[in-house]
Image (cartoon, rainbow, N blue to C red; front, top):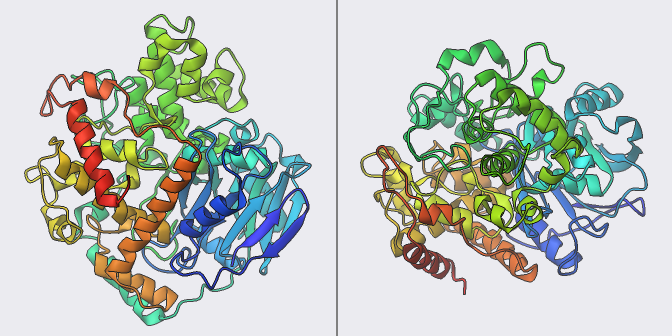
Length: 591
């Protein structure tokens, strides 16, 4: 039962969708509303555009992997459904305030915020918050509504309609991809504030407690979960230098020895802020917060796995302080680290090739804070240009810049190189909402020699057998579709991929039990996979309706092989990629 908020009219209504089955109040319901309530090819910034924010039935419940909120709208970056997920405590805050979901339309006359308290939604003036970062906005709203309030806010990037602006929840937990912060800005919506501690309804508390205890006991024996739990966490790139071709270096143009370093593990400790318990109910504590020790935005340094490669190596930078500072600044200003990094890397390659005179240069760590601020405020020599994202910026620079756009459907590709992991690359290209690194598990995890054998039995249950990571054929296409369907189910139900099968402790059976324990309904592994299929089908139908971009990768991944190291020669032949893509479509029943 979502709250339907019309910011222009100042109305709030409840819409009863309880008779519908299979959506669990998450993104499936949001996609249905998006298709029903907006006409085809409506501009993302049109006041009639719909913005959906939901914890759903599962999000915010006190169990492992359930600290997740979905933000959904037509993306100003891709023109198709943009779905971003925020981990952390906001889902519990939304539920505690008495809401499972919001469907927001219209544009407020003045900058405003929504307050949810006691199961009621009201709109309030936020003009005094204009121009503030997400940290100062959160602090101001907590001073107004109580220290326990949970806040999802945009910074200057969202207000200035930067096409990859993010929404940041509770200082450190962003819903980063696809420009949902710009949709907030277009609606003159500065924040959503949740006040209250109403308990989340759980059908079988004992069963949920048992699953939590199991997860806690399983942490040490699961390599990835143990890595996430420890310091510096799985987002803290440290220790061994990755093999050439594994990560983006200088806009994916360098696939030999990069000359760039990875920090020592102890280097992160001096920058840490205690964040234990950041995801309520989950024992894993994956997300660590790192930030400038003397900075007012220190608490904004929630570190996702993509920040160091995207703001570091992809820009030719290996200075840990510079990258962590840039990450915290992105969260405070409200910018997606992946699209910002990809756009800056594009600009840096254009500069190096003489296409952008006076533009930013690879390796210039000192210039990074200024560049980030210029983009967020659309100021300076290049801020307005780069705020449009790399694909639109290239069209403005000229046709000769197009080969250096590393984007799919207008969204910058994540930092994991698809030449080494072609299944991941196929997921970047063919996922109907655009490229995300956490849309499916990585190919290397299932490599017979380099992978994680403990997860092979779980993978086999969804039709994924071990296979050498670099192979690109029809079977790779089918395997990719099956993995995408599985993780689509997790997104549909607001279950964290970093807690779940096949590589983390929550197995398929545990996931079905989790749904039964919280929702009190019969639920099987087949139901789980059906939810993933429904979400993908709805996203693809919407993408077709909106005439979204092609399911293609940048030419560089087809034409420029990895130059050195273990993965030397890895490339994505066009004919093999087309064969795998056809098999991918067939597996999902797409024409």
